[in-house]
Image (tube, rainbow, N blue to C red; front, top):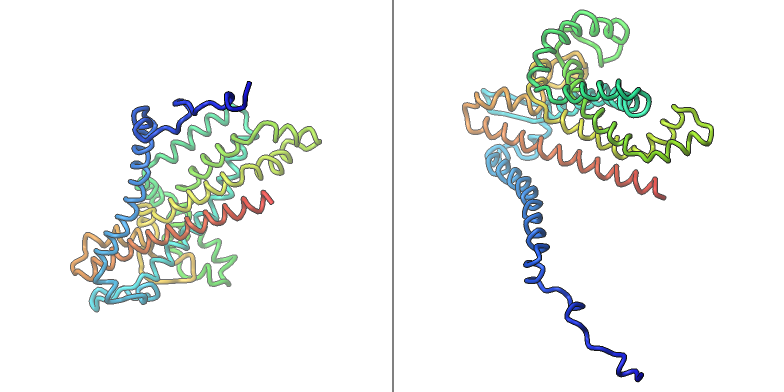
Length: 324
């Protein structure tokens, strides 16, 4: 057989499919539809920033960058600043994570690794119920239970033992940064438990069995083999809880005291961005007041983007370090 006879012309079946053939087969239609859905997410985010930017033009032009550094909130002089609210938002969110992360991750480890199946399933169902409770109910419960507990027992004990520090000075009214952080912790730790538990359950069984085969106890296998394997999922749950804490409104409004000032004491009253918008937007009697509140909404949105972006960079850095 000659070499020329071995060479055959390209068949029609081996040709690259055209756009219309993919469209007829449904692949291109599915691609375009799903691309549209994904683009809508980006479009909504851009639209939110655009609307907030446009509607806050008067406040932006009057206060400029000084809006972020000013502590003023004077309706008579029409002078407004965002610093007390940024401070209150960050402080209460930090306190919430300080309380919720150990509780949430510890409970997730128990439910996923150590608890008997019946107990784990029952408690997991209760955790999911807690995650579905509206925030206003948490606020009402905090007013009747948490605030009296803070006022009569917790804050006096903290003042008597740690009152020499500026963190626990001043009168103990039961409302303030500490109470708001505690409420946010109660609201966020169900999310941390749920997502962390799923991340731990996704760890391959071989990971546990290998550690046990090397002589590790059940706790050592969990802590040294399972938890490090699921750390990215656990970190994701933590930042999901942080996102919930940053934007929470009603429950925080009921227990933080709603005073636009900065104080080093955790017992003092304060304000957050979400709570001041919810409290005062309906009463905004002037254009500059209304647009200052809209400017605060833009600050909160950008603050959320920055924190979630930093979380994403932290996860990427951790992944590269682990893979190296």
